[in-house]
Length: 452
Image 1 (cartoon, rainbow, N blue to C red):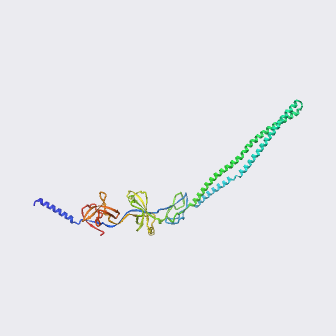
Image 2: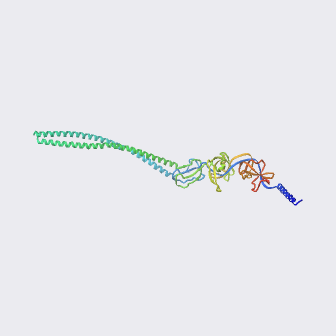
């Protein structure tokens, strides 16, 4: 046998020995689990808090001075019970002032509508006009009489002059005729002047009734103005009375005081929140769910509510409402996430139990597990057995004939504890739990089943 043959036989022997060692070696011990039929429920698990669907805020209806509020947090209140009050004296003074303004305007209207003096003046003015008309008529007749006398005096003077020229009349008779003519002329001119003056007075007197009527009409316009002012004053009175009624602020519901924002008497602006009141028997929960998870959440789905505030026994609930819009929330790690609010209603009897056992209130932190899908019989393996492959598919190490085989899987329902296998694995096959990063396909392993 040549040296070369010895080397070849030695190497072959070593290879056979190595293969035999690998084949018959028990391999690395790994924890494994068996794929078996079981129930699986897919869920979304998020942190949340309790809340009320409606919190009634007692606010200042107007700017004013509020009395001290004696109700403290946790105090039960009844619907219609006065829970806060504006200082009544201030409101009474406002009402009294508004009432006095209305009464003053009513008195002004009565005074304005009293036209007895004006009507008497109108009657007197009409009498003046009538008297002046008669006076002017008399003066006109007097002018006519004076004109006739002057005409007679002129004719008499002409006859006397003619007689005197014929010496049929004396000088005295002529002088007497001349004097009579002058007197008649003066009287006539005086009567004409008096008639002219009286006619001017008549025109002025005729305007007096018109002035009085216009004054009466003006008082009617003033009545309309006073009516408008009175209407405004009545509105202010109603507002003052309304404010007095609103000054006693009452609870709209049977509930409990959640928070008291003001305690001492002080001047408070309109809209200031004084108290918040709610019904604790309407308590519900709210969770902020990631937008990629909320698409699987539907109203009516079962919810398990748990956490320190709930106690050792979780509470049952169901999804009541899903907000239509999302919002951005920064996680504790500083990552911006898009989340959607989901409202959860407690199942019948659960809230009363939690209120009696745990005194659960508003704003308490809880955890909500929303079950989005479930199967009563599915091929299930532990969630820790699967991982993502380089191509993004689900994979697991399956133990076959003591060898770890890398296997691609089709996964159905999935939660933090279990995974449903819909393809790539058979019932009772073993999968390695939490495989080490250095585990590769084809390595002999010794599976350990801790749960069997």
